[in-house]
Amino acid sequence: IIIIFSDEVEQSFLRHSDPAMLGRPITKPVVENLVRAGIKLKVYAFSSGGWAGRPDFWTDISSAGNGFNFDLTSNAVNMYNDLMSIIDEACLPR
Image 1 (cartoon, rainbow, N blue to C red):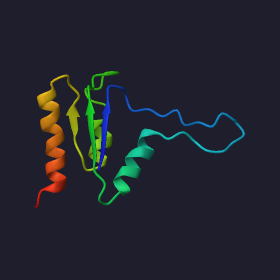
Image 2: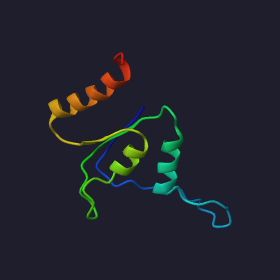
Image 3: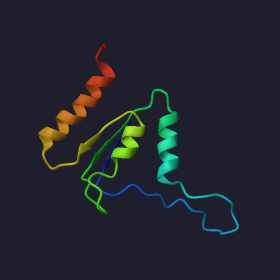
Image 4: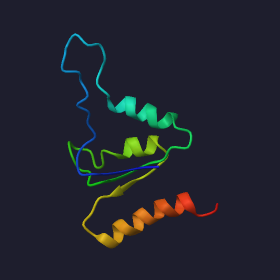
């Protein structure tokens, strides 16, 4: 289980400082394919969304990871209940 708390858009700054080094930055499709490949992996995000015209920018990644995107809010009770729903799903018998 991966749980992300962020108020920023998904991004990567992973480029080698030496232009002679081969490689490419880690892009959103690379991350989506990676989390899809995890058979038992679950990715959950708590994000505030609403940047660059997109309502919630972590939804694509959390959906690819068989998870869900929750609202990142200052309401402690809502955040607690959302977090407990993740823990319940992982720990309670099916």
